Length: 225
Length: 161
Image (cartoon, rainbow over all chains, first blue to last red; front, side, top):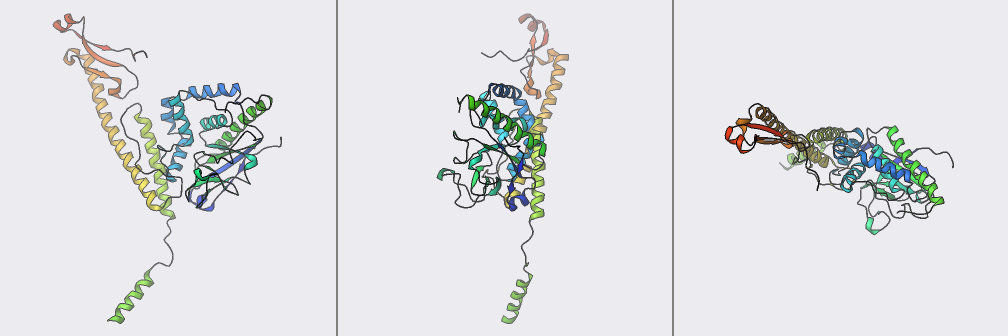
């Protein structure tokens, strides 16, 4: 496999001016979707064990979750109603009493997001046209179908052709990882006050888990998704 | 007269600004205030644990992520400021009540006979867990009639059934 590197995506000028520090970074991974390896499942169980009510309460003061709450507020989203990805996962963990495995790439997203607090989305790399970025949606655009019609001005992940996903992680059906996927593009959303180290850590955690599961998938195509 | 009015109207037109006002400094200031208030609210949220019944929800409509106009940013800033103020006041009142309960526990331990049957729980003093302090008579009825009272401290939460 060719040497990989974290790439910085583009941000529309009006967003860059309004939200300094808002960035998107990506990392390409040669991996197929599949069953999550047992080692990663153990890691998820340990991760779930570390998340308790008090830790969730305290985490709101930490720089990374706080930064995304502030970003959500500044974007007009109430983070208590439409939670940031890391808070949504923490609440899900508390409500369900654990982190159920759903195969990759879902499990990689869960682990990377909970370990770092940075929101991660994964696309089928072959279905993304050019570099991914962030921009406001224009009238009439949708996330791959009439059901995913976007409001004009809604900030979305996009490539050179069309919107890819919402900021909350909902991916367009025609860009999502599927059975035929052979390469994935992992994207991380950066907000103000988030360091490059945290972004890189999130991307590499997800990439390594995807690779581990992808190599397992080649020899054992059994899937849990 | 008509001539004068026309001239006034023309002068008013000349006073209109040639360019739109620059909102950027105001927007920056509002966004900085939102960040600071969100930090304050997060600290209050953490400080309030494990107390129940405090309202942290900020009353502004949640929509799709977008660039907000100045008025919307002001609304969010105002709603956050109001919530922070409310929570700070409520928490202050709770602290005062909890301090009184702590003093009551000390008083109960010193003079149990003056606080017959009084019961104070961990929740009353803003602590997690199920401990409670309960003034009960020593040896049941004998203690009641002999005025022998003591503070019984529970050992914790009941086992889950």
